[in-house]
Length: 531
Image 1: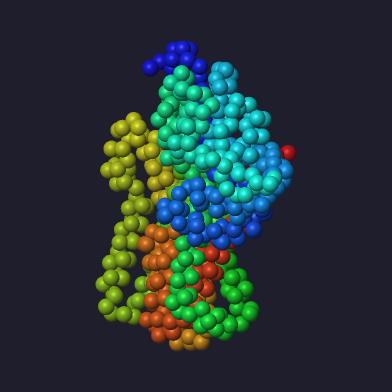
Image 2: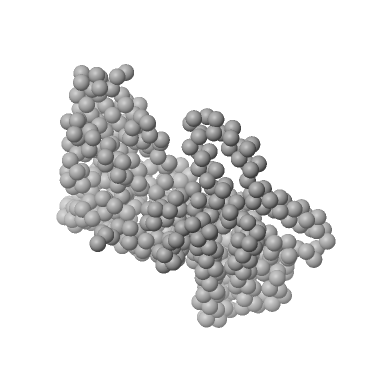
């Protein structure tokens, strides 16, 4: 069908979803965080974690989880106060969330004289003031129930999601077949809206544009929330299994100065890993100021509790936005980080197991496989010839093949012997320091039979097990392995559980906390007006 001829026959409607279509992330959580403050917001997520977990497992519907969140954060708020906070959010924050390409498309429709309608599951109370300012003709969002001039936290009517979006459009416009409809969405919640459109656009804004990768830019709160929920559930079960009173007794054995001292040691390990990253950037030809690079590096820790730490790739996006550093080479740098981490962990595990004759053949096999992997990556011609060339023959895959080739070239540079030896050495020290921290925890709790080498083996082997489990942050796999290995070396069950959770809090969750602080600081810098 010819777009222009069809549009001339019927009145034209352009219906836009809001979250992750017009914006680069969900807007409800930033709104709630601005309303209640950062620390109360994250505490609330912890309190609500059972409900959020049930929603994540699809045990309760979207609207029910949403009402629970709204009741907790804004239930009882006066209407006047809510409107003031909503207008403040619309004026100060929404502009920082918007996709430039989405705004450009909206403006195109407005110049054509099309009726523009915002159809979103987001709260209408903060969409209205922003949409009025930007020039939308109508706003159809989720409405809040008000009783005695106060917000109850319940939804009035239905959550504007899925089929409800189409029903709301029909309530306003009548028979939709009387219109030529453009629709823009990003998720399954927009499926029905896109189905009724003459020109549906899923994660893109024109016919010649590639779809936007979901969550491409800083939708980091969701990943963090899932990881926290999983961890809280697991740790609660383990504490109940060991006995809460015995766990508290084990914790009381530790001197007060030990934890802060060990956190300092662990943070020094992060510092070593940062210089490895900065070294990679320099070798790839990028000069990023140390202060900004360090903040971005630490900010990526906010998503370190992701499968294989894949969420740390957010630093590639942040470097692109902040310093216009190409994404493909920095993703190669991230791969080399994970590779040298794995290399160092395997070396430490092999060193710990070398005294066991039964494991020597396994150790030799693992080392041989790593040497082969290094050789292949240092000499990428085989990969290019047998994988990339066939991909590049298809026009649709040519761009992907080019990006992969750039990443392979960067990785081969970073894995040359001099850089590989230095970066692996830094990783060995960083991982070793965390193992030493576990050793001092064991000593403080009276498990004096565990040697420093055994503590390093327990920590590195459990970390490797967690990574192979592919759960967020290795949650479950790492803890089970650490507890099992500790008990294998003669550690009491309660001490094994307590020491494991303590070292996980001091490594994984300390990193996440540092990452959140750095992420918030970096987002504020990005949002600040340039002078």
